[in-house]
Length: 189
Image (cartoon, rainbow, N blue to C red):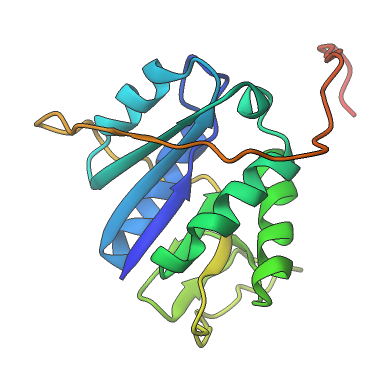
């Protein structure tokens, strides 16, 4: 089985949550990583150094710069037929993209998994003081999108893997991000 992991990054560095997702995906056999961004070749190179990754796809276009859910979900939907599972970190980005992908593919999304035992068995975290048993999920004919909580990270790869430039999709009527206003509060939420 081949899994495609959607990399989370800021166009210059790879987010640690992506590394945890790769660790979970290793139980599925082949792990490919999709790096969608703008001028993010350094991220693709970093992804190629992750232990367990057999292929890196790099889609570089201006409409992937802010990694909006519309752009990323369209890209993943186009790639889904070649993969048995689609995984993303259970971060804001992954939780925005994966439900769209699951709905478009007409499959169930597996949310907040913490481990993959095999192609049909996943572990979820403790809920309401009750540990959830391993969860069996019958994989449909199409890819199953998963959002993976960050836990363990893989080490670096011994040998360097070459990454492949991927042709970006042309997406009409795409929204543009006009700005981002982030603040670091000192008080807890």
